[in-house]
Length: 229
Image (cartoon, rainbow, N blue to C red; front, side):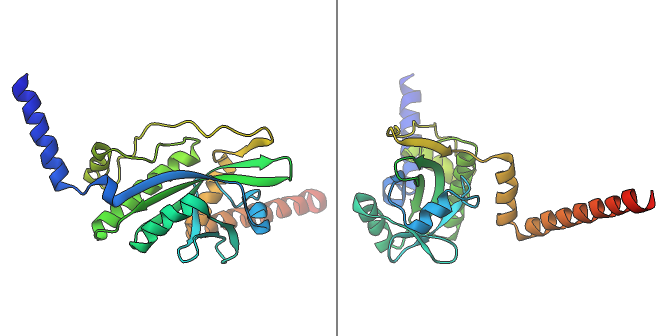
């Protein structure tokens, strides 16, 4: 037994020497943002703010943006300082929408955001972490609140699997204040189709084609039914 324990220790040390340290090259955390711009409130309470979708991020000003550049929210305080440190070191930052809440007091939106950040060591490492973050986004879409903080062992699994390993446990959501209710915390079937179409332009074209073919078929049937039957 002692020999097995010693062998396991040596194997772990060899792995830690082979792979980069998680503390020095990865960071993941959630942020509940309750101060949005007017455009941000409209966006996050609208149909295009889909759970699990990646949000545009202004690295220079540490802001969330709509795809057309309109500011949705300014990130401030300790989260902004945390991100500023990563950005100063040229880290990659992905931001995903994890949940949306409705605040009845002022009829505004509050959002949970997932930040996944890493040091771009090389092209392979970048591709691995992009794949890992997208797999986590799929869990957000399914209604999971996946733990974003990784141990060194978990980080090694991510790197060994080229980003395919993402089985961190779920964590509890931050408690809601009295005036908050859940607006969206997973994707509906319709949103899954919309999300696919937005991600794949070809998918959008296919959906549009199906819609127009169906519409023309209905019009032809109505003309036949009322005038030629």
